[in-house]
Length: 475
Image (cartoon, rainbow, N blue to C red; front, side):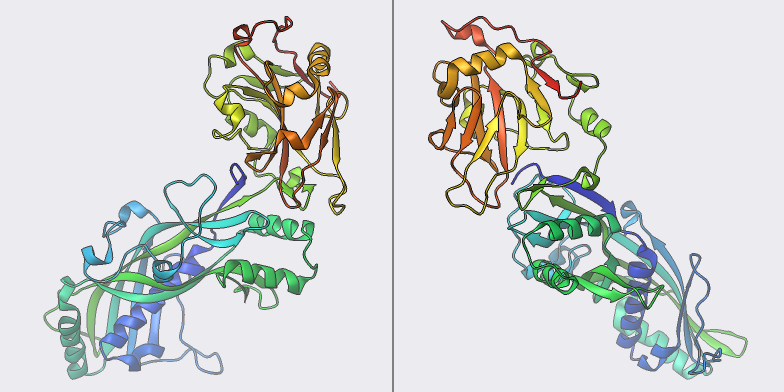
């Protein structure tokens, strides 16, 4: 379904959720490959962003260790500072891929029905019935670590240095390490998710809500204990089996000697895929109810600016049609104002060159009655707007002809999602429109369109199009 609302939010707390776990996993992987697994519990990673971590015993007392690994972490969140081209494939690099997570290689990509753009990854949440998608925006990121391994004896220090050159060939070979991490789902996205869930016709309970999230995310969303408060659960996105590239660089000929220790130094560079942003696409109507504007991701002023220069909403809606006729993208009045739906290019209305002047999302009456129907009053019942009297008079003369392009330069149509409802299933007497077709779960819209070149039609009553065709109610 095209033109859903889009909520975009940056993933926060990347240092503790993403960067530090990746640094720890990468360093432990390298130490394991060197055959020094005995040092695993004596790793100390410090950075300028956090206090120095300390190894402690079971009683939380500082523990003095003889064999230890110290690493100074230098992370970068700028994707332009990556060591390798983020678009290189596993074949190009010889081992793995810098930005693509492993599960996406085998995971079937869902069909994308909205407007896609460069940078989006795969959907981590998809409800085909409610038309809700959450996708990741991933960027390549790099971290480097200055690693020091301290030994009491020269022999194990020399063995560790030899292992570096034997295992990693001193920076000539790019390897990859499987890593995993999670990141917090932004609060705004959670609020919209929960609102849509409670507006739906699903079973209502906290457990059912959690089950819905897990089912529609195929396990890519999970509830974890909050790192700052163990009594609070937080919703996180999971990244499993991510392939991170790494490179070892060492220039030592012999271990350094000092303070009764023998130290082996090397630099570890890791490049990985970091989820930087989430984009949530969702509809304006859920379960035949209009989503409140509290859950709209933009203000009315922002929406007006984004819709172009030919429409201002203040004391009235001013539609400068004489300018819009010269414009390839005319802007109709919309209800609600936050609706982003546009007339599909494949519709018969668009193919005939008609241009919409008014689009309104509508809800249905008696949705549970198979014999029910919905009636719209175009004179007094249009949501948010009223039509000018002479336009109403013309519609009253045209009646059902306005549904069929029967020599008219005004058209009235109903769309379910992106497809026009068969005009034969719609009745129109010039004022009241009766909708006989229904599909529970679909989003319906009333579309009033005009032929921008009425002079091409002969025998039609004279009608002047100006800036007062539509007015907002209450003004």
